[in-house]
Length: 81
Image (cartoon, rainbow, N blue to C red; front, side):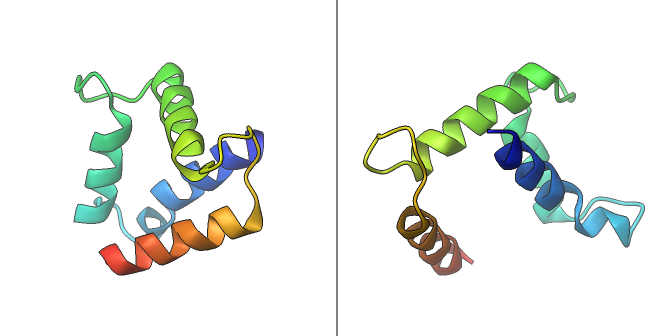
């Protein structure tokens, strides 16, 4: 679960390293993680978001994420872009 948190945080702030301002995609990620819409992201909201993401990726609900589940997620994300 820790690696999933690191991945989410890494993607959330990856492009902000190049720029002081957030781009639209980063703002969207922030708004998704800000579950109570108060303009701040708490550790509880990050944990809840990671749990939601984990449940969405874990298609067969076995509490494990397989490489095939990640591949399917990647395909979905690519189609949405």
